Structures are given as C-alpha cells and as structure tokens.
Length: 422
Image (cartoon, rainbow, N blue to C red; front, side, top):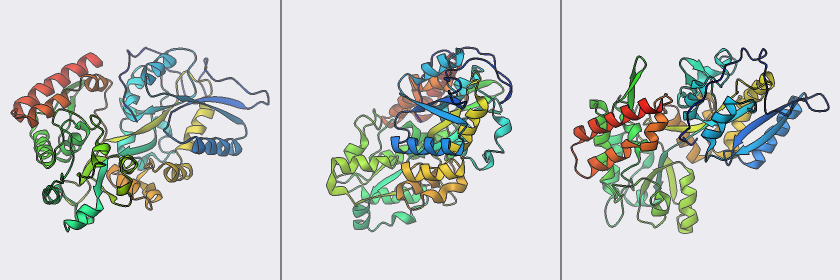
C-alpha cells in the first residue's frame, strides 16, 4: 500500500514457466515429511494476526502437500530489501508488495511473468487500480490482493443541522454547494490541507487529465494540460471552504486529529480515519458517516487513488507451482470475502463489492474503487514522489501563483525526476 523510494534495480535473468524454473530460494526446502515449504513475505499490519493464522491453517488443510512459513516485513526499507532479494539467491517464494512498487521490481527481471494465469485468476474483474500497476510493459507480474482508498468522512449531526442529505451528494457541484453551506458559524465546511496531492490526482483524472503521460518510451509531466488545470481549479475552490494549511499535507498536523476538535464538517480520508477521530473525541462516536468522493457528473463516483497490495512471485523461487497455489487461494473469491469482512478492505474484484455492503466505510470505498486509478505506471515515478513537485505546485497556486505557470514548472520537474529515476 505504501510507496517507498527504491534503490537502483539490479538485473536478474528471468527463469521460464511456473513449473520449469530452477535455482536457489530462501525457502527451507522440503519438509521432513515430504511437503513443499514456501517462504512468504507479508507486510506488517496489512492483515491481522488472526486472519493470517486462519488463512494459513485453511490453506495447509486444503493443500496438505504445502507448508507455509510467513515472515512479517516492515514497510520502512522494504523496497531496498526486496530489490536485494530478487537479485540474489535467497528470494522468498511469494512477496506482498505495494501496488505501485511492482513496476520497479518487474523492471529488474526479478519477477515471474503471470500473464498466462490472469484468466484462471478471474483477472477480467480485477480493480484496475490494482491490476494496471501490477503490469509492466504489457505483462502481468502483480496479482491484486486488496485495496483501500479515500472517501469523505462527514459529521452526520452537522449535515442534519444544515439540512443536507449526504446521500444526495453525487456531483462535485453539489459537494461544493453543501460545503459552502457548512462553512459557517465557526465550522469549517471541509478541512483540506493544501498538499493533499492524491486528492488533486483524482480531480485531474475526472477531467480527463493525468499527472504524467507517455509517448513511446518517454514520460513527461502533464499538470499543465487544460484538463489537469481544471482539476486544480476545483481543488482550489474546495480547499478555500475550510482552514486547512496551504503548505502542509494531511499528516502535518494529522487531519483526523483536527476533525476531532469538533469544528470540521468533512475530511477526505480512508475510513480508518474515523476511528482516529473518535479515539481523540469519544463524543463524536455515532456522529460520523461516509460517502464516496463525488464525481464530475452523477454517472459515477469521483476517481480516487487506489492504494493496496499485490502479490508477486520471484523468478528465483524454486517453488513456483506451490507459490502460485498460495497466490491463487489468497486472491480467490472465498478468501477475498473473508479478508474484506475481517479487515474492512475492498476486495480485489468489482464483482465482490457486496462483501462489504454492511460496512458503511468499506462500501463507500468500494464504490470509489470501481473507478479508481493508480499513479503513472513507470519505475521512474518513485523519484517523483521522493521530490514531490506536486506538493510545491499546490502550495504555489493556493498562495497566489499563476496556475498555468506553476503547472508548467511542476511538469518540467516531474519529467526530469522520471528521467533520473528510470
């Protein structure tokens, strides 16, 4: 789910098909009882210990010839650790990776090409925001695992007092009108910090623009397109309906803690932000609701950045058949439904959205996830996020700079960062 800056990607010769690969692995080999042992790297806090244990027990019961050894990894430094593992002889057999990290790992040649397994895995129904960044140069390496994305968390009591029906807010214009009405009597209509660039990305996508575009093998920044500038204009209008700082993101200060102070009607956050709000202000329990980020028209919700994880199989694994069996089970419908119920995540397929229908926050996420997107699918994007000229661009425009000029400067910075990062 979290995008990390990677060290240089090292070359590795890709082995052949699932059953034909040779070479070493971090796997412990076969168990004394003849079972195949696979080593699996999963990320800390991606799933609960309870769910992890339930899945492993269920998997081993269904596949008694396979033993699973899970190693929990930390998000900090995981890019460098995976890169090193893929380039050596001690790679695990399955790795959970952030959906936007797959391109960097695939570029090295260190991942198994699973393109011929997409149909078997039900890939036609995968969320695009997980599936598309899991592919690289037309080949599928990452298999969608779970998704999470931002929604609008709102104060139900303030909406009721203002006579606003949140369920009726389907368009951005309706959202602006409601937020203007809420932005009075000491209440911020919305707390939107100036550098929440993921939210800006969604508004740009709704207008038909993008953060960067590709022509042949060349990527260039695209914040200065007419479509992207319209997305920026909407962000500026919305941000003005509150007191969010123009030179900080949602973490400085933590926006859920700001909402907990009682003077904010809305924030844009993953649903988990509501828990932080009520932990800091128990008086707000039962007074928070959720709705998808509204779209440009009522035809569909607004585009949102899809965070989440994919599962990959290293090319160096000597247990690729067993590894694929593990991936197939964990990303299959039965366990996806259980995962959604246990963790309030969005399942990896649009056809499984009903699994979270009873969860208000997760169901709002699922509605947005159906039209969600990911950042530009290029290994060079990590360098963009490292410098993040998009944040500087937002602050510049919100503090009075000409949007077109600032966008041109930011687009140039994006282009140069992608060149150095590829």
